Image (cartoon, rainbow, N blue to C red):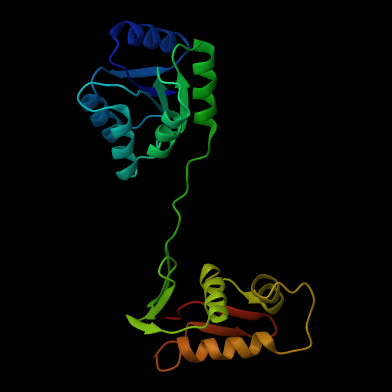
Length: 225
């Protein structure tokens, strides 16, 4: 692994760096918080080992700063403080794990390996787009060509499902199971009725339709050329 060690205690840093290199890892070391911040934000590492109390910029400020800059590198925070509030503060700042000094080196290695095995975090979409149609998932609004479309809650759910599956055929059964939570085929045209209302709001008056019927299969949402 390629590691960044940010530790201002020269003796502790020298020991950790030598031990980590002997364990087969590449290690960059920063003594001061500002140097650690520059390396953490500008280089690529598998894990960052961050002392909490640092000169210039403390460890929590560094973690908050790199998280705000969308740096996803796992951070193991080292601290001499063992209070629950302090641990919670560190994790809330964006650290991934917390190790209290003094610690056994084998535990440090185990925690580093565990952090390195974690899958990278996925960005969570806050909006869906199909052609000129946009759904803002945070504000719960829908616009087409920047014009607001008012939808009922069920219509919003239906459109969200179609947009998340854009380019793929969505069957009537899929809609019944995922939108209405039906695990049986009701003797009603509930899907067709809601789909008709939705299409009138989303497509009517626009030169290109986005919701299309796939005869005998279901529906598909995409923008035809």
